[in-house]
Length: 114
Image (tube, rainbow, N blue to C red; front, side):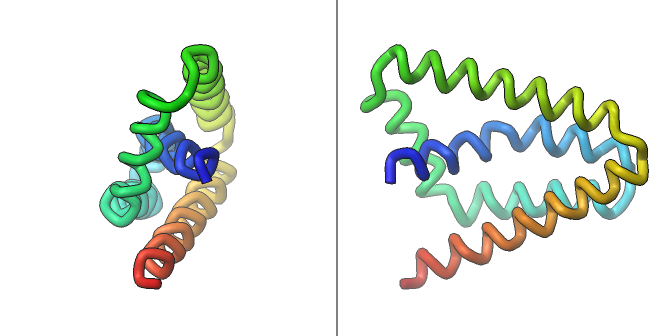
């Protein structure tokens, strides 16, 4: 469960990079991505905060440094990827991202209602 919570927090931390990458489209798809991440910040807030708490309070310093390194690498990967994609490829990638985040949001809502 700890890994999942840290994963939720990681996704939240990558949101800025992913939104920025999709903003290159300057259309409704980039708005959809931003909205999906904004919704994620709301519906998954408890899980995001718990993931952050785990990183700050329960993981070893080595694990935290490893996580920070992986987060930085992931951020750089997405920046490079989004910059190298053609607009058509970027459109497809961002549409998929918006769909996946919307699905995740629905799953979090369902989980919380149980």
